[in-house]
Amino acid sequence: MNISDTKATLSFSDGSPSVDMPIYKGTIGPDVIDIRKLYGQTGKFTYDPGFMSTAACNSSITYIDGDKGELLYRGYPIEQLAENCDFLETCFLLLNGELPNAEQKKTFDDTVTKHTMIHEQMNFFFRGFRRDAHPMSVLVGTVGALASFYHDSLDINDAKQREISAIRLIAKLPTLVAMAYKYSVGQPFMYPKNDLSYSANFMHMMFANPCEEYKVNDVLVRALDRILILHADHEQNASTSTVRLAGSSGANPFACIAAGIACLWGPAHGGANEAALTMLKEIGSVENIPAFIEKVKDKNSGVKLMGFGHRVYKNFDPRAKLMRETCHEVLAELGLQEDPLFKLAMELERIALEDEYFVSRKLYPNVDFYSGIVQSALGIPVSLFTGIFAMARTIGWIAQWNEMIADPEQKIGRPRQLFVGSPVRDVPAIDKR
Image (cartoon, rainbow, N blue to C red; front, side):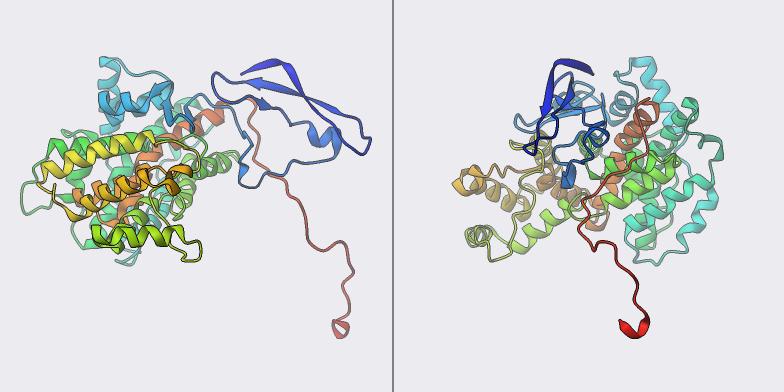
């Protein structure tokens, strides 16, 4: 980041001396005002609930322009990556800053593939969970437990150990997600197959069983791969910020990723695609859409339009366009073009994009609107949608964590507060309370 010649001046109406603060320029995006010395100079904090106007770090990984509907990984538009690269190429890019050449890709793919197995002792962890345990609770526990098996890669100050941990997390998440699914349906665990691609291997572990041969469908594998690419990173969102905050204390990478998974579990974050699918099922049919839209417009109804709008994007979510195409491809491959849920989704999208109420509020379809339908068509149960999200986002989390550890400006996270509780008071005797 480069310091600007311009400074920001904070003045006070009570006669206190004004304060000059440096301004830094990023490569693209808004400038930032450096307020690190604000408290020392004025005795005052800033107040920013939700961190809507606060840059907590500098990063060179992901850039979002919400007004343009633009998402870049290391400068590359998400559309180009989703169409021209596979997920492991995207992982390499996020970790290393550049796309791999053919030799680097082969080495990286082979390395990840050789780490997909989990320690056999981990199998016993699953027996401690109820069969109806939510997959996200299983993932929080098992990912955190990985730290007890890999003591050789817990030194966060060793770049090589950080790299090994990154590879292990990328490689083992699909295995753990598939195991969480198999455990919930009472089927035997399927071990990874080293001759399959990353996404094909996951689908094999999910849907194969020892009784019959599982045939990998390239169209469906590509669809899953695209889902993973589109969800791989998304700048400083809630779960990524959680990973960075946990990591700022010096916690090991497995603990930090488990913390990210716990945050992602929240319905306002990772559960949005599940909520969008539930909404479509509740609407039921195309004929019911007009009545549903009227309820959405009625503030007193409590009905919300799920899968539309975004905290950052004030334009069409670029990921939604790609997921829409993928949705068409998957349903065509499976002969589900007349699927009532997809027809309902298309009609709801059309109406919402033409209705002034939604257009004026920039409530465009987001990636969650389509990804739930795609995953459902792939045979992934609703309870596992957020687990797939965690599997994809692990690379973003670990890349952001790795960047943070190497940042010389990094300090342990310590937000401040505006205290509105009771001032100092004395404890009265018990008979006077």
